[in-house]
Length: 278
Image (cartoon, rainbow, N blue to C red):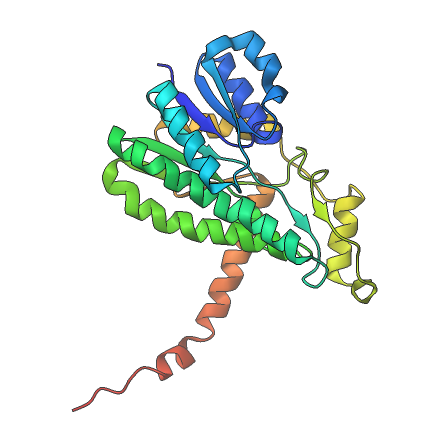
């Protein structure tokens, strides 16, 4: 059976791979990107099974327009993939106000507005899937990526709440957490001149690893794209799915550490309970 997908950020990375794989197997794709001509080769090969639109997800009105237009053009959309996003590599003091605003507007608010625009259509259908592409960095942290983490932890909290709200309508939401993968993430990182004060600190070490090409990237982008497709095909609807051994181990370590720290404060937490009167 043919499935229809709506995918943001399809010019490269996971978005491009998903679009290629889905079209190759006969599905329909509504692909959005900043430069639609980047998919001209796929248009030539797959014709009207590929619908494209120019979209910058930071433009809220344009998001609503494009989502509405896609549903009108294609009739039904089975899966919405929030994939558009990028990273900001800077210590907390190094990033400019503009850089901070842009990464939050893209990764957090852009994803929120795509979901909000799609939900009325999915509710009317009485079914649908939303895949929110996040990262291991939605539950873990690395120095020099604080603003990126802010956007990803934020969207994960939003999506975890929304998943519970929309379940009664037959709509499922899954947070996809890929590990480090050789896509264009590293080369597309927004950066800023480093402050001398942060030399020889963990922030500088992370920056050097990314910019020097020394940060481990143990995962296959092709396999991650296929795993996302397989998840939808299987009908399984987990809230989160880790994709990559690094994601699995890093998130496990983070959760275990947080739980241990949480348990250590049990007594003080209970000590501030209001005293029962009478």
